[in-house]
Image 1 (cartoon, rainbow, N blue to C red):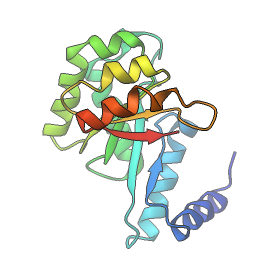
Image 2 (image 1 turned 120 degrees about the vertical axis):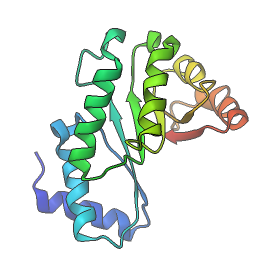
Image 3 (image 1 turned 180 degrees about the vertical axis):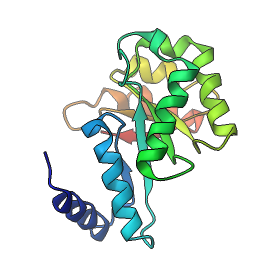
Image 4 (image 1 turned 90 degrees about the vertical axis):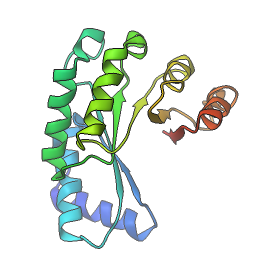
Length: 173
């Protein structure tokens, strides 16, 4: 639990420190994280930030069958409502099962959400380098979020070069 005033103060401190990118998910606080970002940007409309949110954990996250066009649309609509926006800046699939990367229907549904203006771009948040390497070749994947830090350097060897070659952004977590 975080008090609203504390959360808004933290977001403000991040902006003062130069942040311009917020990463959240529809399941963080059951949507409360998205709602707090929306409240923050509503009271400070001059602040321009890119908000990345994630979807896919509202259903069984280990079941590839959960990633249907209808579920994707519902998750996106809920995040749009929470974030008080017509178009999400960036939607990331939230660590989906590996089989999802092979399902054209999932990426076709994401493309349709871009075409209808519900999302501006999409990517994936992954657990492994193998998952990142499966997502990067997808035609319209804009970003891959992967664990990359002083203790987890493996992505530097394969994932980053593949992303550079494909023009896919990397979000290090």
